[in-house]
Image (tube, rainbow, N blue to C red; front, side):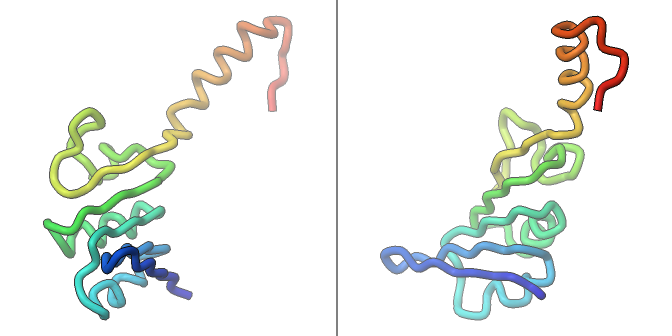
Length: 108
């Protein structure tokens, strides 16, 4: 099921998109002031739909590799947000664990 929720604050619509299937409902009640999205596919779909409405994301993927932003320091355009970069951190976490417990042979 597509999930979209709206918050109206002082006459400004803030739209939260749960997945890209919610996109058709995005402009149903007029232009939002800001759009938030948590799935990479949803962010890409909203990004393709507008160049002016601010989009704020929270994703686990690398936003540069996913094509959400140009680079992390200066995202550019109307898209910005936070990434957990979970996949990039695993190797570093294992390295730190090996330094803390060098005798460990099995991790996981």
